[in-house]
Length: 274
Image 1 (tube, rainbow, N blue to C red):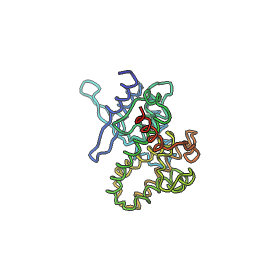
Image 2 (image 1 turned 180 degrees about the vertical axis):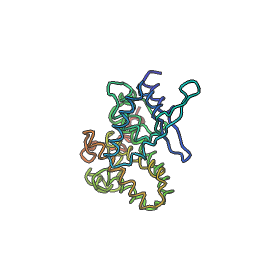
Image 3 (image 1 turned 90 degrees about the vertical axis):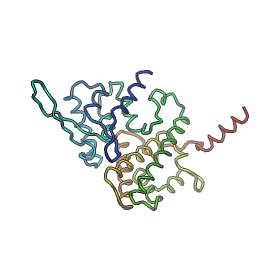
C-alpha cells in the first residue's frame, strides 16, 4: 500500500456516524490526518472555512458544531479543549483552505468532494484513468447516490420525483430543468443526461446529490416542498462554490461526443469479436 492509499483510508478511519446515521468528523482528528501539528494554525484554517460556509448562505452551526471537551493537563487538573464536529461539506471547505503545499490536502479535497462511497479508488489511481474511464466511474457513483437520495427523499415525503430532481438541477444549472439540459445537449427524447456528461460535470452533480441527502437527514425534512427547496438550495450552493473556485459553470462544460451507453455498446461489441 502506497502513502496515498494510506491517507485515503485515514479519512474513512476517522469518520463517525451519529444516532441518526449521519456521518461526521472531529476537527482534532482531521487536523492530524492533514499533517497539521499546531491547533492554532488549524483553527485559523477552520475560521476561513467558516467564512466560505457563510458566503455560501449556509448556517455555520449546521456544519461546524462546537464540541469542546475537558482534558487532563497533569496533577489531576483539567482544561477545556476546543473541538468541532464537522459535516462532509465543512471538511471539504477546510481542505479547500488548507496549506496547498501539503500533499495530503489535494487528496482531502477529492475525498470529501467526490469519493463518497465505499467503492473508492485512490487519487493516484483516479488520475491514471482516461476521461471515459473517469466518466464511467463518476456515473456509477451518481447512480448509487441517486438511489440512496431517492430513498431518503421518499421518507421525507417526496412523491413527485421529477419535480424533486428538477429542483436540484435548477439550482445547479441556473434555472434549467432536466429537459432543458437535454435539449441544450441535443439529446434524443428520454436519453439520460448523466450518461452524456463529462467527468467534471458528473462530479458536480455527485456533490449536489450527496450533500442534499445529508441535509435532508440532518434537518429531518418531512414534506415534499421542504425537500424540493432543500435540493434547490444545495444545487445553488454547489454552483456558487464552482464559481468562487474559478471553475467552469456546468452548463458551459462540453458534452462528450459519445454517451456512456454508446461506449458500453462499442465495448461489448469489441469483446464479442475478440
